[in-house]
Amino acid sequence: MRARRRDRLRYWFESTMDRGTPALIGWLGLGSVALIAVITVGVVLLTNEDTEANGGWAGVAWMSLLRTLDPGTMGGDDGSPLFLGLMLAVTVGGIFIVSALIGVLTTGLNHRLQLLRKGRSRIIERGHIVVLGWSEQIFTVVEELVEANQSERRSCVVVLADHDKVDMEEQIRTRVRETGRTQIICRSGNPLKQADLELVSPDTARAVMVLPSFSSESDTTVIKTLLILNNRPWPAGRPPFVAAVMDSGNLAAARLAAGASGLVVDADDLAVRLVVQSHRQSGLSAVCNELLSFFGNEIYIRHEPALTGSAYGEALARYDRGVPIGLRTKGGRVILNPAMPTVIAPDDRVILVAEDDVLIRLADAPVRTVESAIAGATAWRREPDRTLMIGWNSRASKIIDLLDQFVQPGSHLDVAAPDRPDAAGSELMNLTLGHRTCQPTSRASLEALNPGGYQHILVLADESVDPELADNRTLVTLLHLRDIEEALGDPYSIVSEMNNDSNREVAQVTKADDFIVSSKLICLLLTQLVENPQLHEVLTTLLDPAGSEIYLKPADQYLQAGEEANFATVIEAALRRGETAIGYRNGRDRNTAPSYGIRLNPPKDTALTLGHEDHIIVLAENE
Picture 1 (cartoon, rainbow, N blue to C red):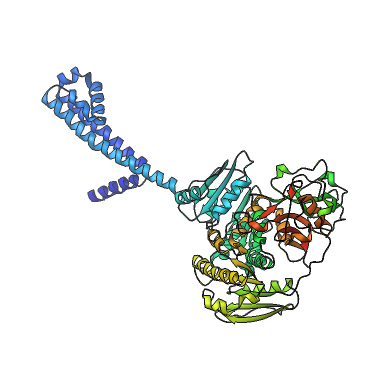
Picture 2 (cartoon, rainbow, N blue to C red):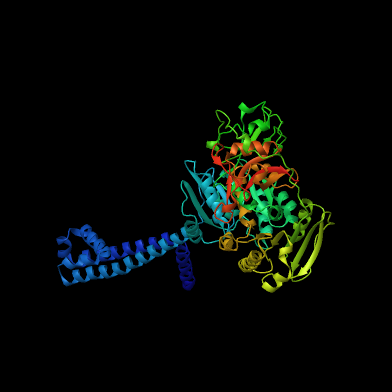
């Protein structure tokens, strides 16, 4: 019976200790009270003179408390040996108690700091943007969102990822140095867990972006995250969800998981379209990069009652800072580069390219065009192409199928790869397909292909190795091709896929005509949709092979070479061809970062002289 009582007392004591730092402080306080009480009683009972000399039992208790907290207080004591011994005892006991208290407080404080470091507290924000996931492109996303909210008095971006909070914040501070008025908050947690998702207060968010990881399991993670978001109760209404899938086969499942408020981008299809269209006109990726980025010019949708009843062709010259590219009807239908006589209805919205929405305004009077500088109308006749595609990956079959829709009948495509691949998935109408054995990084193997016999060369990224190693191999291939081209006298264009945008900067030494960094462009697209979901239909239509697309056409088809004009004259020249001009490319700067010679929405009245190596950027039908 006695042993059982001791066990119960021990169990009770251990239970109180399990309550953490407050319980430990409580026990130390109780120990201090007990020590002071025992010493005070001892002094009062055993030393009458010393008790009276120090103010009675209350004074003795106060002295004991001070010596418990500060051992140095005992240095000035005097009295009987017994009194001094009792004061020494309370001082020594106090040293142990205070030392234990400091240790407990330090441990508790460290524990609390560790919890804060883990980022497990729930944020209290409204109107913020939530980014779920982490990849190399998170820095592009944060940088773009910061730029998009420069005009806001205050904005907030919250990142939730299964990484250390402090490490995420440090990386963002290193890679995104200027955040302006935008607050960046990181929380450590798994977006696939409902409890962790609550840390970022999705109920009060303005939008939620599911960031793809660009790995083999990326689509699985994105779809499950969308399912969790869609099935979660939303008392105040759900914000728009924006996500991307890497495999087109997962698109239907992802859209079903996202629900009606979700926007899911087919990253695979986007990459294929960019590769194919850039193969036909180098510089397209630089144009798309600016249109999708918040740095420079972007796309806006604006209601302009003053243009009601005007023809679309007339509206092209009406803006002081901005270039119309199409119309959005009352029913939400997007028409890019409509027929010039199309009348703008009262409920139509004008889609235009501008540097910032606050700069969009109608001009007091149209800029005068230089009629003598407009070139005569000439048909742009496309001849059958001979294209060499070096390498093979999961997008190659789709690239071949889409390329077949764009090229002229009689065109030829050779696939150069170590092994003969299973080529196009459908019957080709305009392309003749061939295969040639090649080791892409071997100079002798590339020379054996006789690249000078081709007009265009596509270099695809190798998906069988690490992305960084794939970019290294691509860089070697490009160097060989450029050296061969210079020896032959510049007979072909080169377009290449890259995995990392940082490697694109290194690869500029190869002077390739264009680099497609699809991961960056996909994240730029997602960021645009987070800020304005209405752009989804516009951007989808812009990249669709049906209808009008972006083309870079020789400048001498619009202006007399070497004759001074202005961009208003370029717009008028394109209008007469049924096209919408949005900018030009200076051929001398085609290899100069960051714009690579691209100039969108230039001032309409600035003097402009273009030559044979320059191009006009237009929206036009496929010819």
